Image 1 (cartoon, rainbow, N blue to C red):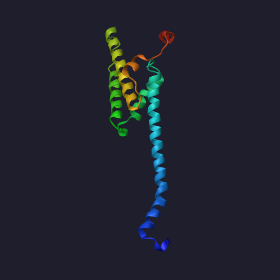
Image 2: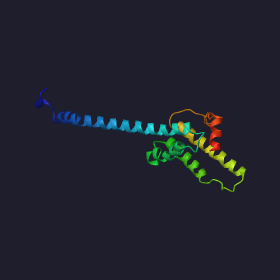
Image 3: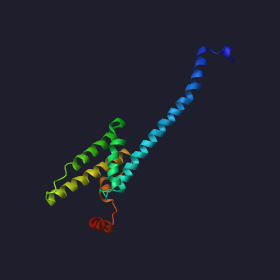
Image 4: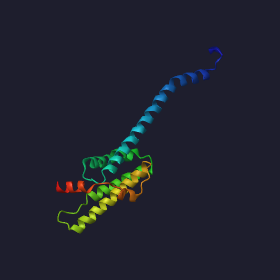
Length: 157
């Protein structure tokens, strides 16, 4: 068929496909890259929290906690899983800010530490589900290797 025999709508469709096709392909690729990077960043936070859950005062653990708001931010909510992560983080954050006074009894301090531990397990379980892992709360609570020698070393420091 010659250009003279083509209808005007056919010419418009061909021209539009020729111009918009590459533009849409680039935009689709950028979307895929952003999604991949976001997932990688969220997994990195989870991996850091998991690998340092026995050493909650470790700088990496604290840094990862502070990145939760950035990577699971409300503006980025893709669904209830992200919202649940933010809610679990806010519950832990609130508990951190209700620490007992230095003059608190040993029992009060122990109870607060237990609440913190439970909030961390809840946060990790929620993040686990949001990221497609299948960890039970029991695995998160007890599946930690932390040698006694390392505990003794940290206590002496």
